[in-house]
Image (cartoon, rainbow, N blue to C red; front, side, top):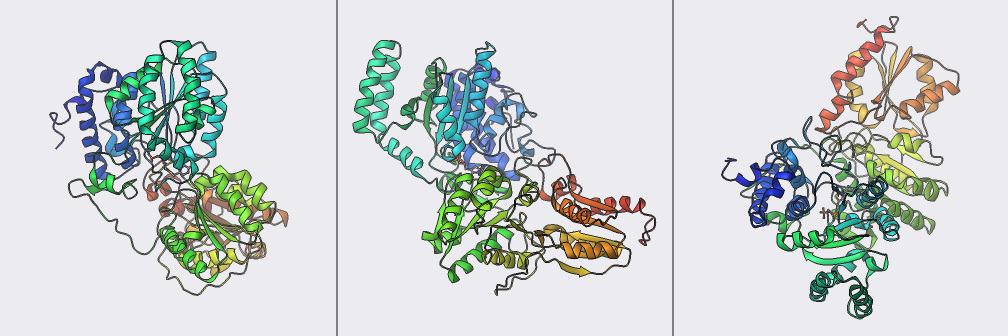
Length: 630
Ligand SMILES: Cc1ncc(C[n+]2csc(CCOP(=O)(O)OP(=O)(O)O)c2C)c(N)n1
């Protein structure tokens, strides 16, 4: 299918140096090939899609004009960097992206010298680019640094902090604002509205850009013009936010027009100080189904490129995100104080229905995890019942807000912590490996981990009945398939559930998603099994009793072993002076890369065969146990 004729230009490019040898006139044809290649390749396995289609021309122009890898391009988030991977020597491997041992989902320093900064979480690019620019300047190197950031990623505090800092310095940094008016869902917020207003002043901006190019050659005239222009702009445009912050703002320009992209970037390349180029692109550009519905095509699974049909994954039962979404609607129906909050993850967190049914009680705060948490704290102060739906990995951004604004004031905010544990194909940047460790050391928190779908619903409800902050952490995807009861009943806080009595002397204390595999292990080793339910408060009486009645313990959790739930068990036993051999099974002290969720569980030693063999090895140190395996 991929005949050399179809990809003649693309195949001639093994690195950006080859690209730079092409005449400018060939670039549109290259863009066409690159786009077709992306469509064909992502169709086979799925992956981030619409954003990459929107950056085809921009990527070509950047590598064409800048001397990469000497010059640094820093991609924000990195989900739009597939074209970059293709042009930087990874074309043939693109079909392996996000799979085990395949290309990383996002730019990764260990993968290529062209990946200047590891990304996955958003809004880091301007800070990183500024750091690079200053380090290069101090080392006496003349290198250009370009950050490419979307209008969604620009909504985060971190991006504002970097704009604020860089705008006050005179270092040479170029920020390319890739404005497609979309985050994963519609972009929201005043900044997004501001960009829209700037675009509506497009005619003026075009005129301005034209004159700028000429005047730039004559600094004094340019400076005069700039001053009077600011005066005029104040009347014509709604504001000049970036310029007021010390940036030279250029644009908006058409991000699919290679001619104006390359010539503008060339002009900007040699300007000193902080420059911001506003580029307008279309998410999904060149693939009509993705242009029509960029939300659906943000990260599709495999699809038929001709018909635009995304193949349905075979899954049984609702995902935990859906269980949460349904529960939120049900509880909101009963309790008018419930407020749903998402930091730009409406679809992923299961909030589509909630927004439709309760638009006044739904808040997408943009990619602003810190704000989401403190905003919830404020709501809780006044008697509202905020529910923050957030991925485990993104809550990392809001740690101080969690401690200082929520927990310290003992405010009843409920955190629905999705993707807690290993997430799979989004890889190391997105694994929810740490939340138990970073949450359980915070006073006043209640932390729950459901073993199944129904327990998830009941735990969420339990959270709303408490006078303190609480967290329900649940994994990506489907649970074991337990039917969900419509009735909601609060669980007794800090009480575990005894599941099975074994005779081998071994007891398994399992948390959340590990309860299901632990059932199999309990059968296999004739072990006692407890579904611990609460990480905090831990059921210390149950732990003490089990310790008294057994010869060895195994704790199981889908979280880092370091500081995790197993540590809580051992701390409790140590405090009571109880000692017995204990094996902690959880995520080891290394980053778990991308793959399917099962691949990742296996990499962490948390799939069934690995769990079994770890316990067997443990047994070998305990010959007095009655397991029949020694
Ligand atoms: C800190 C953080 N929160 C949330 C996300 C999830 N996320 C990935 S891409 C994205 C939208 C980015 O929008 P934008 O920067 O405009 O890029 P576009 O997809 O429109 O090209 C979001 C919310 C993330 N990667 N990092």
